[in-house]
Length: 136
Image 1 (cartoon, rainbow, N blue to C red):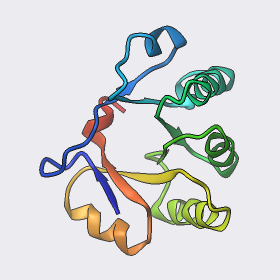
Image 2 (cartoon, rainbow, N blue to C red):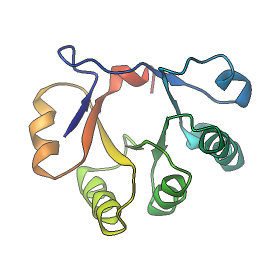
Image 3 (tube, rainbow, N blue to C red):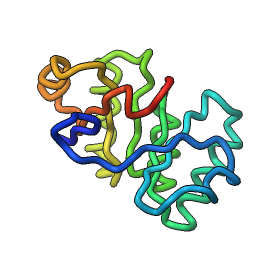
Image 4 (cartoon, rainbow, N blue to C red):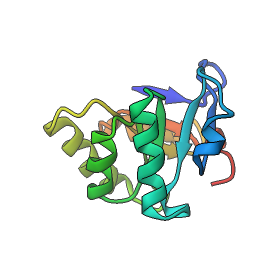
């Protein structure tokens, strides 16, 4: 299980972006992330296509199966479950990722250590502490 954001485990910084211009100001060791719900879908697809084309590792928040499949095909490294989605939704997403042998990891956002065990028991690829993503 991947755990991102725990103080005992090193992880790359996650940098939120919302435009191609912002990507130009990031460093290679950073993981870019964006939320298509906070911009129009075309912008999300543009960012993902750019990252895919230039092999920039990125994470994207997904809130439905269609987005999950599209961004997985655009080579997202991480798919972040939308904070309003339940653990049951995340389990459904995880089954799809495993069924189609997708190369991305599903991350469930958590607030504290106590939630790690619950998410692990559901078989989700990993967790990401909400503070890693900043003000979500």
